[in-house]
Image (spheres, helix red, strand yellow):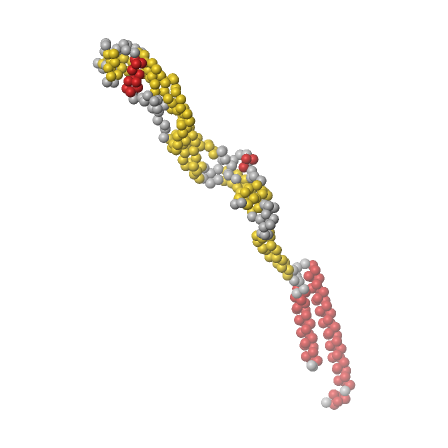
Amino acid sequence: MTTKSFIINTVFFIFLSLLTGPFLSYGADKSIEIKKDIRAGDVLTVDSPAFVGSSSEYAPIETVIKEGKKYHLTNSEILDIITEEKTEYSESWILYEGVEYIDRMPETARIQVINEDLKLKQTVELPVVSQVEECSYWNYDFTFPIEVSGYQEDTYLLGEREIPNGAPLTDYAEEFLKYLNLPEDYYQITSIVWTGEPVEQNGDMVRNAQAQGKKLVKNIRAVYGGEVAVPSVQAQIYRGIYEEDRTESQTDPLNYKNSETAVYERQAWNGYRKIVRYIITITITLTVLLLLLIIILTLLKKKKAEADTDPDSQSD
């Protein structure tokens, strides 16, 4: 190797050391990969119905059983929400008392529908969906007027039946009920009395009487129901977070729900320590360079001196 080649190789090596010094220090830093499996039981989230007002009655219970698994409450919170406008089936009832045979139950009724959760009261008209007879009894406060036509001095007509004048009217109670189209199973007459003298109406003699007796009446509970529009309101819900209770199933295999991998990598240029390391590397490299230059210069100087003292070299 010639002196010139030696100098070039030396300078190249020093330059390469300066260039790769920081990266060599980076190579000392390693990445660390950590894998871990997270073991957990099933998690169950339960929301209460939307409510307005006191929240105590909507608080989640401590234990929930679902699909044969037991869950314990671990956390709960109250959330503010705005309910969506929707329609839901609602019904209410009306108790009709003293309903008699000739009465007709209403097919529809305006009723008040109450949503206890949202504290909403709405008056809507709904159709009847069912009727339940709760009880039946005789009502003795039963009276009704009777008008007898064709009244004559000796007889009068009750429909087509001729009744002798002066005969007790009660003896003809059944005829009066048939005349009025009232069934005997529901109405009974106990007395009939005249309430006035005969009068002429439109060329006919009529006379009024008053019947008294009892009638069979019922108490009927009618249920009215249908779809009712529920408006959107500001409300709250109670949310409970439950975790599966595994204390009762210790023999079950461990239940690993997911696996996570974390990679931590140290950075060579990050921090005071890296800066110091780089400065030290540069300093050492420059020192080596300086020493090599001194050696090179010394060798060159020595070689030159030998050349000056060599007679053969001078003769050439």
